[in-house]
Length: 364
Ligand SMILES: [Zn+2]
Image (tube, rainbow, N blue to C red):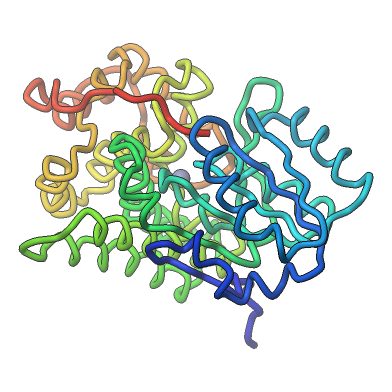
């Protein structure tokens, strides 16, 4: 039996991708059609203006909507406006939240979506999952894959370092997530899709291979990160869930968000938690292998650098298994205070402190 996998029919990762949009198939899609632009905040607005300039002669109508957050209320409001005169296509433009909101609105109103990521801070840039805020809690929901993804490398090279670190953290977490998936499969809890796990694993390996090259430009690094995050999205599309890219490290990050005030970015938190979960998984080689990359890429290696106290880490780790019904390595340990203390000491030594700084504010 074969399965049908949804992937974007247009994927553009190039320099000048936005000014050159008129040369692409996407430009043909919007000929005499109505397009709704859902734009994030901050610098994203400037990029939205650039897109309007390029498509204004081609589309019959352009409606611009702004998205300040990813709450359920915002989604309902945008959907209501959109359905007054349903567009043929939605362009989602932003760093993370605007992309998620566009995916949800597109899925619910049955309008195809093209995403224009302005940062690569997570695998949301091309995935069948969206994170929305409901009752002050972030929830992941299944959505339709985007029909197209346009990544302008000129935009990404000016993307704040912190957002890039977060994107890389979200990518590296595939390793721990795949181990957990395998574990759940062995324990008879879940089916495993080998093809999906292969793609999610290769997404990380091809990125690490790129880093091993002697000299690598920022633009090449951005391209490699974007490509690998997109492969992660495809792996999720094959699996029909976030399983290949979200395991125990994501559960800890969700618990940090829910129980400890969510002080850092999603990708920063999973990068940090990954060190803990890979240790539990006994993947010492992987942790050792990753260590130089954490230094080289500037990833957070100590919880205090992300603003969390030891007590908060305890709370997040204890609460993590209950964040969702997903069997992981956390289910195989008795998470006593003493045990958590011992692992925290080993995984986050004093020497790992003060290497990472939360600086610029993230883009919407
Ligand atoms: Zn993630």
